[in-house]
Image (cartoon, rainbow, N blue to C red):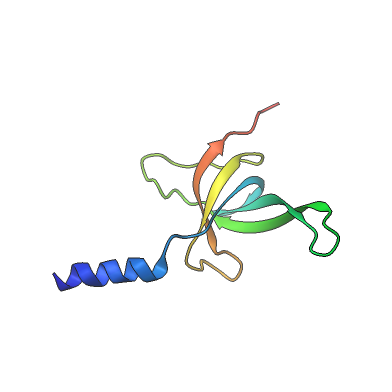
Length: 103
């Protein structure tokens, strides 16, 4: 009984992890992909709509053992915030939403 309340309390304090949808721009590293997330926002002073981009390094290991997730450049992916894997890596690939068109 005490364990369940402790677990529920931990879940309540952590909340949901942040998620982002972006496009894989590089998969040249081992177990890591670079995901570019673009968003449109108004400039604070002038109000002009701008396209802002941020690059995230995301962990892309075979986290679903039977289904190995292979991520290629151009794929649209969902990434979620997670514990630090390295100095720069604080995100992980949750799933591939759309595969890139192969030429």
